[in-house]
Length: 424
Ligand code: 9WN
Image 1: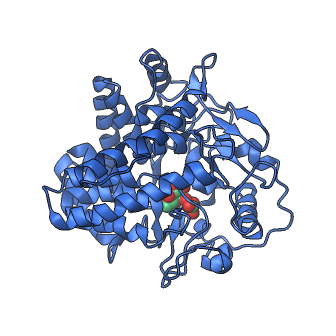
Image 2: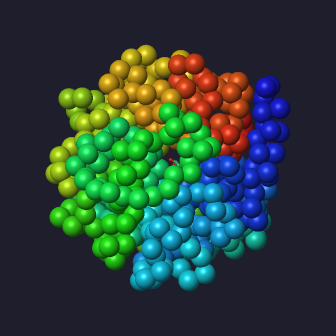
């Protein structure tokens, strides 16, 4: 596909996946509204129709809980081909849940404010867009505050996740040891994903047993803020910290541009930046996560380790070390970039979801991070290679990093949306 055909096809895909203002990630596999997917989609929509882009973000606000959390899934009652379905989340008794829409009880990486700033900057002063984004500022401010109020039990500027699904990078090897500690017992559940995508490309039964166990645990604990002694899984997630840190900066800029105040955004950003700095391992030369239940660093490497670049918090002297890992053929320098796990990791599985395949949203955040760090040539090369990958294999969910083969769902929305930005 040449670049113009790619652009037209990406636009057509977003239109085809539009469900009255929200873009489903992939109609056959994911028929609801997902949190960070919508933010990435808004970035693509900004090139087609900024009002539609703003609407995508506004649709996410329908799911906000009273405590500020914006959940990872907002359910479409007409779609029944995804599990877990709304009942499994048992949120009917949850304090402060939204009344008008069923949602999951967990969150996802907060890309919302970053996407909103992006949309504003491409909206040409459109009043309707500005009006919607003012509401987004208020909602994002409450959500960001929630992360540091309810999800940072040790007050270290490091938000913790209670479920691998919250990371958005679900079955990344970095969660294996923390999950292995959990004995889920007999969990009964239905899976529908394996009917759409080959099971060798999806999380395993080991993962799903624990995913469903942890969903039930949230309800059992009345959705209370987690502490390491009360929950089975609680991990300080470097990627969330990085994305949130970046989002605070974007929220601050967005609010100012709209004549609003978000007095705590930069303060929160500083706390997060300090938290992220504490996760850099000078001996190994990369950033990592921290397991709060096991009280130990998680030294398993992952592409998420580059996201402090996206936050713009990597010290100048550390950037070359990260870039060297990105280019090393034994680590992240595979034929088709960027593998989610390093090629020399014993857990590296080039066809299985977040354990090896390349994902376009991760590439996009790394490209943005490299640009920020003024590594323009590498950012440009990664952009070209990413576009070549999609031109060759289509708008797939993820890609085999050695062969470039498209894997996972077809017609995947954020792949199309972010291609529109990479082409611009
Ligand atoms: C669970 C929708 C979502 C993405 C996640 C991706 C995948 C869901 C699943 O799909 O997760 O949330 O059922 O596997 O891992 O990042 O938001 O595209």
